[in-house]
Length: 306
Image 1 (cartoon, rainbow, N blue to C red):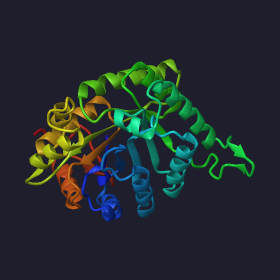
Image 2: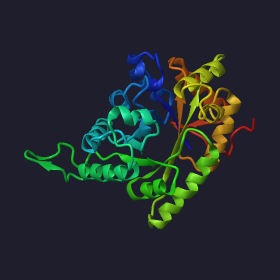
Image 3: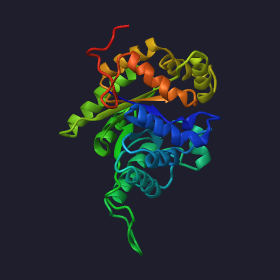
Image 4: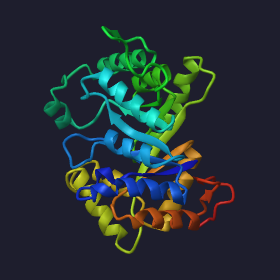
């Protein structure tokens, strides 16, 4: 299982100009990928802009999104061109995890339709494929980015239609950032969808978890998860907070669980935007048995049993 780190773009009050330095240092210490979170009505720096900065500031690290919300982005041609641009700037390092989107206020404020999201998602994916295949033409000829800027696609979703959509349009599946049981059932569902689609490859599976390192990790994680999900009374808070990683023991336990469940790529999203989190996480990963070969990976074979 390859291990990446999230950009701090979704942490309120983060120093915006340190996005570039965070990306550079994450690559230097050996993280396999940089991830981003997407949300409209929250203090989140736009993930496409941040990934463009990371693409230009790095040479090797992979770029992942888990997930970008398609449901309230009302122009799939523009969205396809934005993703293609990042992929081209990075030299083909973008894997775009896409989902419908789960925050109702984002749909309302953007003027997106209230119903029919699955069908609209399918239509958007088809239109995006046409852009990347160079099929969109106008008075001045084809789009400036035909074909060469097609990123890998991973599709999120926890129902059968989502698994089938991933098998039809994607290279894999994005699991939610909490609940190992949902992950296991989703891995089973997406593999069955791959078999029904008679695909010869296997789906790439990615997921994310929130983390924080240091002596104040517990309190900082409590506060961040509560803020992001509205309060500690949110129905999502217990599950997300319970699967957040604030100690060596919790990190090791979750690495074992996710690796055994079939995760290929794990993105560890910061609950604190201090730049020292990059280095503290790298040190913690080495203590709990992750290897840099040359980027961080984890397998249960040979890992310490603590």
